[in-house]
Amino acid sequence: MKFVSQTIQRDLQKNHPKVLERFYVGAKDRKYQFRERNPLSIDLWTKEVFMQN
Image (cartoon, rainbow, N blue to C red; front, top):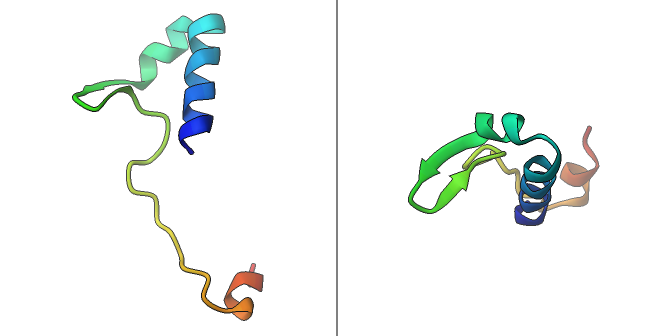
């Protein structure tokens, strides 16, 4: 996810600087935020859980 966020940031800086401003958060550990901070994750312990839609 970090790679994708960095790629989005570089693209917006180069091609769409006004859009980049919408993602500014100015937090002490990051300047921009492109995704949810703590996304819900589901552990895939079994093949049956993994294969669910």
